[in-house]
Amino acid sequence: MKEQDLKSKASILLGHFHDNGYSKYTIDLFRLAINYALRLRSVHPGISYEDIYRSKVDADPNHRPLHHWRRLFATIEHFDRTGILPGHGNTPRGGEKKYDTLSKEFQRAIDIYRREEPKSGKKATTIKREASLATNFFCELQTQGVFTFSEACENHIQTAFSGHCCGYRKVIRVVVRCCAPFFEDGVCEHFISLLPMTRSKRRNIEYLKAEEIASVKKVLTARDSDLCLRDKAIGLIALFTGLRGCDILGLRLTDIDWENDVILVNQEKTGVPLKLPLRPIVGNAIYDYICHERPTCSTEEIFVSQYPLHLRLDNTYNIAARIMKVAGIRQNKGSRKGFHIFRHHVATSLLNEGVPLPVVSSVLGHSSPSSLNPYLSADFLHLKECALSIEQFPVRKEVFHD
Image 1 (spheres, rainbow, N blue to C red):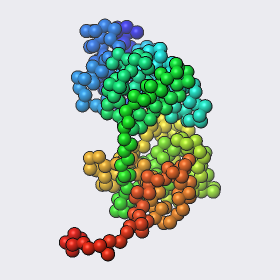
Image 2: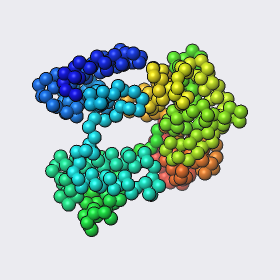
Image 3: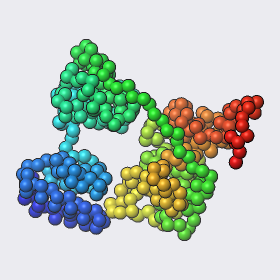
Image 4: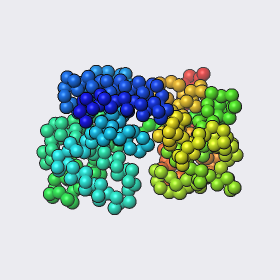
């Protein structure tokens, strides 16, 4: 569409949002983004939405998180190009695909990886994520004038890796190594040898203290708390089962066996089926939400958005943060607020009770027992048993004097 088309049809897009129950705040944001795009087009005809997005971010980087602006302009671009109004599943999350900007050699590398890596048994979602990271990496190289593997030197790669961690290096290495048999001998191997040797860092996992757990339980079970029934049910599932947030949001009515009091989950991360007991406090919370608060809609998942079209929720972070805010815990800057800390609580509670590691790993739905290792750092009860006594060593009294 041309500028005049977007200007004349903007009312259709905004009217669609209004008719489908979008909040005034959201509609005003889209109106702001549309007007900004039209102003730039009046000065720079033919400017791309990617450039419009970058211009907005450069002009006002602190007004909203960057991904919100990208989502706004991506939705407008999709409507601008196709005339299709946004709805569940038909609006892209990004603007113009970076893949399309890659050189033929880098595109070929991504294509090979997408074709060959599924043969290793890796999940499609993991392959998609790693291909996206590699695409971003190749785009960064191209900004430095590197369009083939053989053109890259150590300085180019060091610049592209600036600010990234060890995990990023592992992904790039996996993608390039997968492509090696399909390129000239030694080209990919030499490229891999230039990747920087970044150190792997792991912070100790934060844990909930006993008084924090008590505060969370209080607000999740109190009838007069400021939490809705949906948030209470999700919070209780996370607290008592340790399920991942994505698996909680993926729960369907058919996944709850009310007669046998069990939850049946096909885990999104591992694809491994998981069977967990349905405790009364959890089952009652789910029942109350379904009967007294859940809107009537066609969405199959149990937990849905409170706003039309009542779609499946995207993530649980805001819900977890809201629970902790109402409970009055973990409000300091940098404090971990996601539901994974509830999962960590379940793991450490079982370990403290002396439950064998394979059983704990099974309850958490780990595909490998080694996945439990990070949680062991907070098993203080058993870690203290491993401590060595220093009674026979001379130590000044003042060292441990209160």
